[in-house]
Length: 217
Image (cartoon, rainbow, N blue to C red):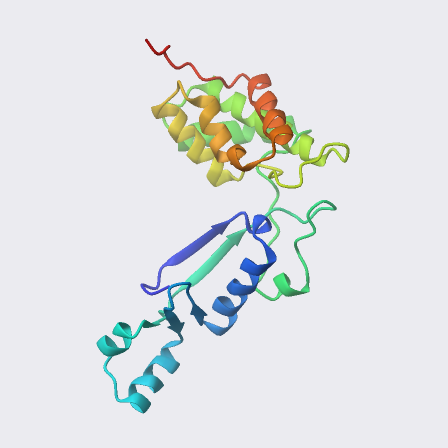
């Protein structure tokens, strides 16, 4: 926000309502108070404070008052709201302009899976075809698991985003012996309840993604 860069929020549906409320003030008002007392204000208010208080920008920064850069933008990714997680409400709808994009992997669309496999193989040179196929198989299984009303998956994500798929494949290319761990980290399984963690671990194993670490002597 200070440097005018692009902030990408991935997994907006996993944020708590209190976090969304803080984003509301930053997105719409361009102002935010951080936990350490730093105040982020709009460029207009920053200039008014300089004039009214007769302070230089350096003095304001010393008082923990910083300007939100005019070019600062936020792009947020989120899954579609579901019965289990109806996160899209009147408050969150005011935050952004929404665009609906089809998920990268559809569980019943073999043609889409083949097309996505080709795209990922081109985007990540050197990645084994088997790894791409296994990862897409896992992503489709994960989506099917999340859609099952009999399975408690309130805190798991329904799909892996394209960014996550690329990130996992790049790491699997560098560390092929940690494939299962890489996928588990992408799904943040360490923060899941035990039953959900085990369910995701079974999906990873069924897809053929395993760790091949050497034994510790």
